[in-house]
Length: 217
Image (cartoon, rainbow, N blue to C red; front, side, top):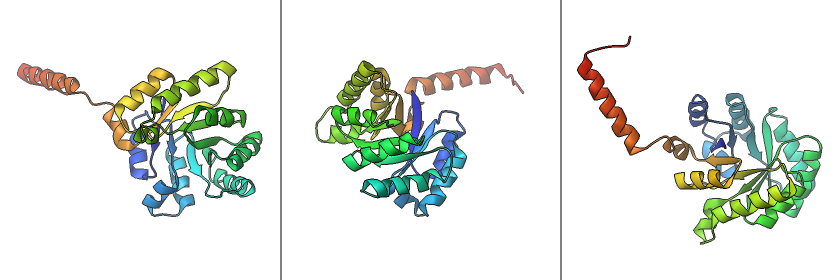
């Protein structure tokens, strides 16, 4: 499974990129708002910090305008992935843009049939929103399972990008179900490394090492 981080905070992105665990970045208009900087400037800086796809979202709602905005965003850097909403105009824009070789992330997916349509439109990534479904008592992980089965049934290349991930259990379950990517907040990604038994074991090892009076250096 690949890990993308869901943020426009360049300091967080650079810190995680240094770990070697980061495969890409997802942004959206809300995250850009929090950055409080010009969008193109933020996206360019993120693209320079990571080698993988960086999703940058259009704000237009009509197909031709989406295509126009998508091409402007893609011109920022080679690793920009144009993010489009899962609407009929968005799918039409997806078909046009992927047909020209652009990477496209179709976002705001809440049903398996929506994901099927996105794959047929040539989406590079589909972003089902797990947490937002859980919020209304619908099984977000069940959606991941349904999409995986449909894509495997028909041999679609579209990658399942589990989004709206809020917990470590979300990451574990998405991985077990075969999601290709999980995009997570920085704190969640950092939290995956933590386990109380790891901390306890390290504490014991260091205490025993101190008793030996040795140094490695």
